Length: 243
Image (tube, rainbow, N blue to C red):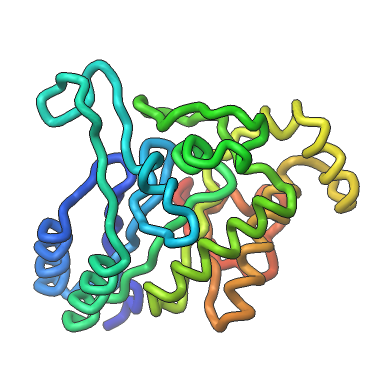
């Protein structure tokens, strides 16, 4: 076929789909000769992928509660997550239909569910709770060594589960207000010799990209990562178009 990447994207972070529903999607994709499922697994509103080293990501970050949450709008907790066994089965089901699953683990923004689970990963150290509304929210990962180790630990388990060449690291809609207001983040920025927070985001993404490259994988991110200069290891997925 003329196009080697013929894909669909599934957002399981904002709305949790059952494994059976995902298999039905894969069947439909195969019928249409689509060969890549971009699986959005983490965001402000939920963390859906079991990570053994960090169980609170799903125990806390996989659930949200508001006055209208739950299937009946009665305030019951809403959410869910995919165990690693379920993910392996879904990846195998896709492969049998000639479909590659590219997982997306969002960073440095869209991180509120992870920060709710482990507040020390955030800039403020506070627990913001898992988001119950939509929009572009200000919660970013910290840039300290502890948080960068968290990123590497998560990617280790992601690479165990997904054999795809590409791993998507997000990079979109990262409001920099918390970084600008944090003396610790500003000190790190200057110690790295970076010009501004846009370059700091490119640096952050590049840390993940280099780690993936060292394991024979490739990083892909949304086009906002271009604003601080293209990280050398990056491929770019544009959602803003030619602008």
